[in-house]
Length: 101
Ligand code: HEC
Image 1 (spheres, rainbow, N blue to C red):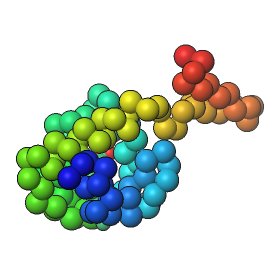
Image 2 (cartoon, helix red, strand yellow):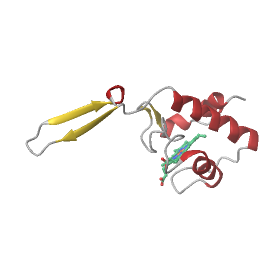
Image 3 (cartoon, rainbow, N blue to C red):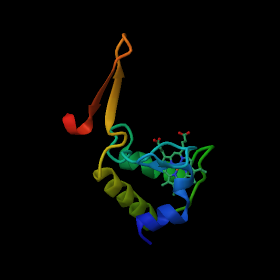
Image 4 (cartoon, protein in one colour):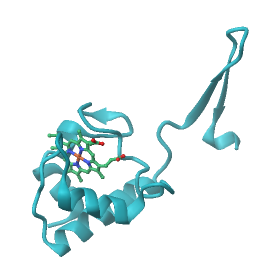
């Protein structure tokens, strides 16, 4: 089964978002793969152990690999949110989009 099918079959989107779309119980996972503080090892650990608010899934190694490559592919398609908003003391909001960097 492909990573995307596993993502759908296990209802990851009920609790997680990709590009801001999905459930809001857990965090957005669009760029978790390339996140320097998280990344593949962290995702594996999370899937293996679960946490209070996230169930343990008992995925096989192949399934975990498939989900990881799905999240890697999603990550490559862009950044979410794709802007950085910075509020100045006078209330002016400066917005830099990823494309301007
Ligand atoms: C019942 C709701 C629920 C479902 C279903 C669910 N998750 Fe989660 N998940 C959570 C919550 C809540 C957290 C945050 C836990 C925390 O940080 O305490 C989380 C955290 C994560 C994290 C770590 C995110 C981070 O930024 O730290 C990953 C990766 C993850 N989930 C992947 C998945 C995948 C893949 C699936 C589907 C196979 C899935 N989750 C299904 C609720 C869920």
